[in-house]
Length: 99
Image (cartoon, rainbow, N blue to C red; front, side, top):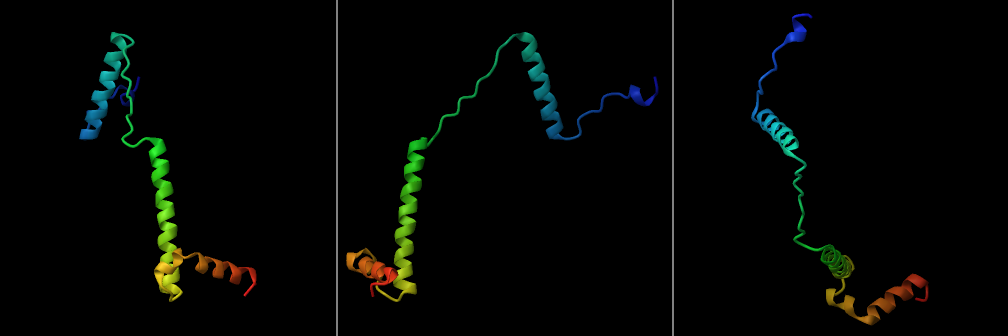
């Protein structure tokens, strides 16, 4: 055998190397003790159905605020007029070519 192939194992240089070496030794010692496995159970702070509801509410709010800014600032109208049915009827009439 050559001298290069008989190198001594290198010592860990950083804290991350030390931590990974310790974790490896823990895994090896656990596997030799038996088949004990640690199961991590993730508990969700916000359930999935509530996340969907929150996203939908945020989308509706974004559309309402966008319409108010678009009509009130860009369109030079009054922002609260967005909620009037006549305003929407007038806009759809313009889009459909009735006016």
